[in-house]
Length: 338
Ligand code: PMP
Picture 1: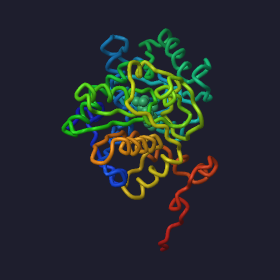
Picture 2: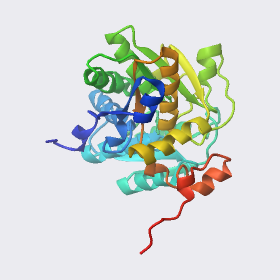
Picture 3: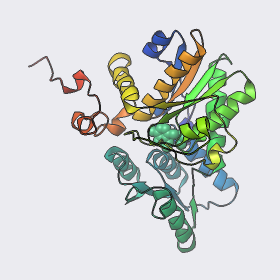
Picture 4: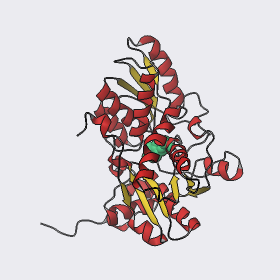
């Protein structure tokens, strides 16, 4: 029994990924973060950021939480905020999926859509949210805070204390590798810190989408990006505070045409309907399995639920427009007629 939705965050199961395991001769498991109340890995960050702000005395009853987010952090923060009596003001780039924006509105977030511009532009969504928080801190009767997920260490701490601890416990310490993509870096750096604290033998890998700059940073020491990706919520261009002091053992750059077929096969063959970043993660897990060789156990993150991307990832016209492969079943009409 749970006292509130807040207590239903975390303790997600590890699910064996059949095809990835069979193809590599390794045991590949996904941590089912889509089973959190806000349906993503970011509920944990939302919870830890809010609890940390409360502990520091920054967040007052009825206060406002402001954040710039690709959507999932906004959803996580809003779920927790509603349960604890806070308001959320969410700044989102207009390019993010309609389903995430709809979810935020349904949950009662006050949503502000802004044009998608690079981080160095003062009108980038993260910077707009920071300025808005400073403004609302003065004008709101109960004050306001900026969640600042990218550079707020409470995000990473949430993954050290919960995600990594759960993975260690669930595997009984029998784990050889962990792989994840990076949005803020909270998941990758936090789980790495937690697992490496338990065993020096766990290999940690970055799975970077095209268009991100971390692969080149960790392999050549230079933040440089090439290409693009339709995945959302991942693809970092700078070393955030959450990534501070972190270094992976392996780095992989994963193109969309390697990641998306994995997502499509998972729905049809394993009943797992997941978002694009999960495809990047599983492609990374397969690459790590090939590096380590058969017989190893690798864990990755199943970041969020796929219906959040119905209009993009699971839409044949959108995929064709982007020049991406469309699975045959997606175009097929029903074979049974009544
Ligand atoms: N996948 C999705 C769908 C996300 O929204 C995020 C967070 N933005 C991530 C992966 C990456 O998580 P993190 O911020 O912990 O790096």
